[in-house]
Every structure is written in structure tokens, then in C-alpha cells.
Figure (cartoon, rainbow, N blue to C red):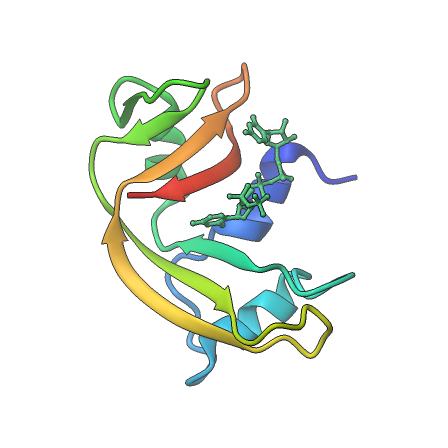
Amino acid sequence: CETPYEKFLRQHHNNPKSSVGKQYCDVMMKRRGLDKPACKEVNTFIHGTKNNIIAVCTASGGKDYGNRLRVALRPFTVTTCRLKGGSTRPPCKYSDNKSSRYIVIACNRNGKPVHFDESI
Ligand code: UDP
Ligand code: UDP
């Protein structure tokens, strides 16, 4: 079965950004299973290497941010997908926003990311 780290990668890691056409979020949210059982409202994909994301869990790439969270020392290119309209019933339609941001994540005791909190 899927570990919390594997779930994090499925939900939040896409590097390099997949060329899936104009509607990146619509395609990727479905491809990663985030349209079931209902459309996930907000989801961020990080276009960075696994090593650079894991480093946010260490002193070389991140620092404490309170509430057991870590904030990156350097920005990542991310795409944040936001559900359009009021309904969470599939098919899910998303707006895409690509930007450079400092990710805020939670790491497990093995130093692997397990939760995406926000990007600032
Ligand atoms: N999330 C994300 N990017 C963001 C904010 C939220 O991917 O910028 C995802 C993340 O997986 C998080 C989930 O949305 O765990 C729920 O976020 P939050 O707890 O803020 O929303 P709520 O649970 O209050 O609806
Ligand atoms: N988690 C955490 N802090 C939080 C929320 C979640 O450490 O504030 C952990 C929680 O133990 C869970 C894991 O993050 O096993 C993944 O949470 P989820 O599947 O909701 O993924 P997310 O949407 O948070 O990225």
C-alpha cells in the first residue's frame, strides 16, 4: 500500500512539469486521483527534484516554521490548482496558477515530506 511519503509525491510532486496541454490542472488532478471521491478544492504540484524537496526537511534546505512545519530556504516553481465553481462533483474543472514560492511542509521522523501545508 501507499506510504504517507508516497502519497505526498503522488499529490504534490511533478518534475519536470508534465506537458499535458493547456488544462494542466484538469488533467493532472484526474491523473493523480485527486478527483475522487470528490474534486479536491486546492492542490499544489511542486516542480522540483525529490532531493531538493526532501532537503526542506533538513537544515540545508529548510527551517522550522512552527506547528511542526518546515519552510523552504529557497523558492520552488509550483503550480497551484484551484477548483472552479461551487460544486465538488466530478468532472473537476480547475484554474492553474504557476509561480515561484517557498513551500511549507511537514516531514516524518525519517526526514521525508508527508504533508503540504501552504506556499508563501
Ligand atoms: N493544499 C495544497 N496547496 C495549498 C493549500 C492546500 O496542496 O496551497 C492541499 C494540501 O494537500 C492540504 C489540503 O489542501 O493538506 C487541505 O488544505 P487546508 O487544510 O488548508 O484546507 P481545509 O482542510 O481547511 O479545507
Ligand atoms: N500531517 C501533518 N500535519 C498536518 C496535517 C497532516 O503532519 O498539519 C500529516 C498526517 O500525519 C498525514 C500526512 O501529513 O499522515 C498526509 O496528510 P494528507 O494525506 O492529508 O496529505 P496533505 O493533503 O496534507 O498533503
